Length: 348
Picture 1 (tube, rainbow, N blue to C red):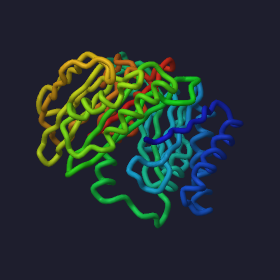
Picture 2: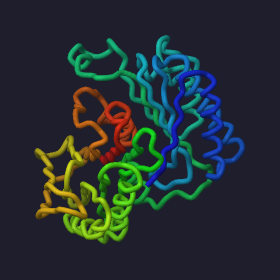
Picture 3: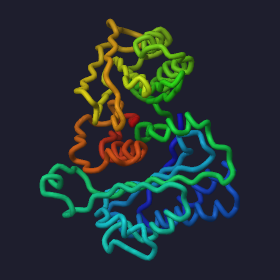
């Protein structure tokens, strides 16, 4: 599971701190001096705009790509005024005149991938405006080490359709949540585990569950959760949800225990996954597997209860067409509870 680093950006002084921190993180990844200089420019552009335009400041996050490639992933979010015209904003020398925008052209040139989600007040219908609970900008970019070996074709392609975000409770140093992504025989396993409470005890319970998933050999999700239940008996316990996707067979299976939320969009049939009551490692009733059809464009979102369940996809026009990683980040920005660990896992 990836570790996410972050830096709040409210003023110019914090921009320099973010730039230096990202460069320290990126240097051991194999980037050349020229590439590190380009990364510094990207962070400077993001940070300068954040300090200038965001009403309450923004936050920059950095980690490695989920697809296993050698490189850097940067994710920025704010709750500022948003961008009026994203296409214009990514052209060099263009500013939106009221929101994050200047420098987007440089960011696009100096990175390998750029994805932006922003809704500015007044640019949508009154209905959509009324539904939105927040406004602002979310920006995702990735830069790969030049000449580095790419991940296996099936692994890399599969994980580009997946977004994962997980962070610990505010003020904590360890994360009691976790997620797992695995592949076996053309099938894909995705799971979110939420150790009870927070802190080291929750982390140990989650780690025990994730350890059982490492041995996945294609079993259905109920068998995986049953194995995790046995492995967690010496821990404080956890709740979890697991989904196994067979794209070629156009089907997927779900099984869950406790309050890990699963929502499915653009499915060829109505999908209402229902978890069983209980706690892995302590009390577990009979597990049930829910089978569903899968088709191109289906999106599954799995969140721990550190993400408020009050979010409504209708409040985010166009978000389903964005990258899963951007989707996961927006959910954490707007609905992650500071009082708990929080995780979002998105697959399309």
